[in-house]
Image (cartoon, rainbow, N blue to C red; front, side, top):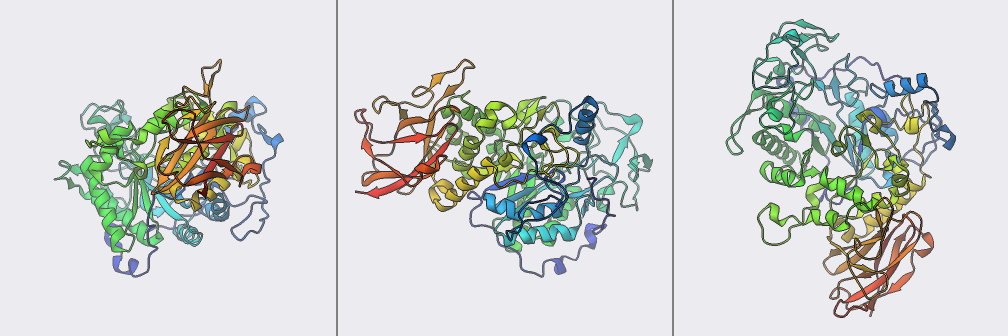
Length: 628
C-alpha cells in the first residue's frame, strides 16, 4: 500500500498565533503515580499498521475484515524469491510503507491485551514533501502533523482511545535539529572543522535550493516552520559531524544532513536559551495542550548542551504541572555508557534514560549465555556513579529493551534478538527477564511476534507489521497481528502476573546463587551450567524481587533443549515463616499453582532454599504460598 497522500492540514504558522488561553481551557489526563511500573511499547508509525489488516481483533473483541491477509508459515520470503524481487523489497524498506496514526488506533485492543500500558510513538510532525524520512526524525514543520500519517484530529483521537484503554502516550520529539531545510554553498558537505559554512538558500517544496536564506518564506512546504525558525542565527551552520565522540563537534555539527539548531550559551546553571530553543519548546507545549499526551521521548540528548536540556526539562515539567500532569514524563535518548547517561540525568532533570549500550548488550548476552549474569544485574548497583557510600538503585531511571530501531551498539551490521536460530528459541526468556527485572520494560514493535530483521542498514530492523511492500520475514502483503502467536501469548501472561505482584514492579533486585545438588552454591556462571562448543554457558538463572517483607523468585532457563532443575538460595529473614513457594507462572502450564517447599540448604550457614524447575527456553515466577 502506498502512504497517505492527504494535503497537509497546517497548524499555526507562528508560535505568536497560538491561543494559549483557549488551548488550556479544558481538563487534561493526570499523569500516573509511578512511571516505573508501566510497560512501554515503542513503534514506528510508518511500520506498525495501516488499519487494513484482515482478521485482527479490535478493542471491543470483534474480528475485523480487511484487505491484507494474515501471515502464514509458508509466506516467509514471498517477496525475495528472485534477485529482482529481493531488490524491490530492500528498496521499499528505505522509504514510506504506509503506516498511519489511525492504524495505531485500530490496534489499541491488541496492545492492551498484550499488557502494554504506555505507547512510545515515533515522531509524527511534518517532513519535507520530497523526503524519504519515513522515520520522522527530520522535521520541516513543527506545528503540523505529517499528512502521510494523518491529521491533528487523528492524533487527538488516538491519545483519547489509548487513555480510555488505560494507556499513556509518549511522543518522540526532536529539539536538536530540523530536517534538511537548506543547503550549503557548493553543496559543502565537508565534515565539521569548527568553522562556519555559507548557506546557499532554503530548500523549496521540491527540495531544490532556490529560496534566499535567511529571508522569510511564505510557502508552508518550503524552508522550516514555524516562521520564528526562519530568523538569522537559528542554525549553527558548521557542517556534518564526523567524530561522534569529539566535543564540541558532536554538539555543534549537523546530524548527517539534518540541520543543527543553535540552542544558546552558558553553563548548566547560567544557560541562556536562544529564541530558537524557546520557540521549539513552545511548539511541543502546543502539542501537549492539543493532544493531551503524557510525556516526551527526547531524541539525541547527547548532541545538545547540558544547559539546553536542563532548560527543556524545566519548561516541560512546569508546563505539565500547570495543566495537571504532575509527573509529565521526559525520557532522554542518551547514547554512550550508562555512567554518562546517569550523570547527564542528574545534571539535566530528565526523568529517565533509555537503557541502551551496556544495559541492552548485557541483557542480550545473559540470555544467550555469552556473559556472566552478574554483569547485567550489577548494572543496577550504581552508588559509585553519584558518590554515595551505599547501594543506590536506579531502576526507575532506566527504560530497558532487548530490541530497538537503531541497535547503535551493534555497529554497521544490525539485528533483532530473534535474527538467528538461538535468539528465536530464547525470545520468551529474553522478554520475560526484561519485563521482571529493574527498569521500565520497553517492547520494540514486533518482538512479541518474533520479528527477525537483520542487515547492514537500520531499515532491516524496521519491518512493516502490516505487510505492505516491506513486510515481516522478507514478505509482502501479509500482516502479523496474531494474538495466538506463542511469544505473544507467553508475554501477555507474564505481564498479567507482573500487574498483580507489586514486588515485580517496585521491588529491590538480587541475583541468587544456585546449586544442582543443594549443597554447593554459587552464581550461575560457575554452578549448574555446561560449556558448549560456541563458549556459551547454559543454566538456570534466578533472581529475587523484594518489596518490604515479600520476596518473589524468578528464573529463566537459557538451555533451549532441556528442562533444568536447580536449588535457589532465598532470604532467611524474609522466609522465617514461609513453608512453601507456589508457581505463579511457568512456561509449563501444568506447574502453575503447584508448590515447592522451603528447606534448609545443605550448605552450612547459607540459609533456606527452594528447588525449582524451568522448562527449556522457559521462565517461572514463584511466590510465597504458605506461612508456618
